Length: 87
Image 1: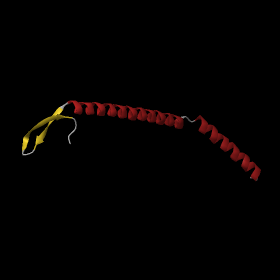
Image 2: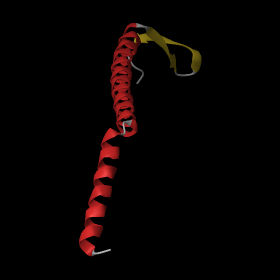
Image 3: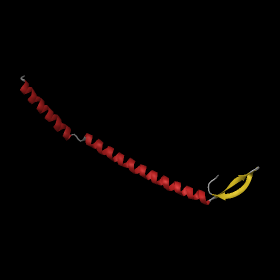
């Protein structure tokens, strides 16, 4: 085969490969699923973070409202009731 004809044959093969590649939708489906999973992950992370901050705020408020007993010196069972955080 002369080199010119061989190049023409390779061009047709390349065109056929490109057409087959562009018609194939398996890769695009995988990309779509990947994007959906990434979106779900981002929303989940944002939700968990928001709920965590909200719960931490409520626990802090609850800790500041409820009095607790601080043991006094010499007697572990008795003490004074205080509110707030422990020293």
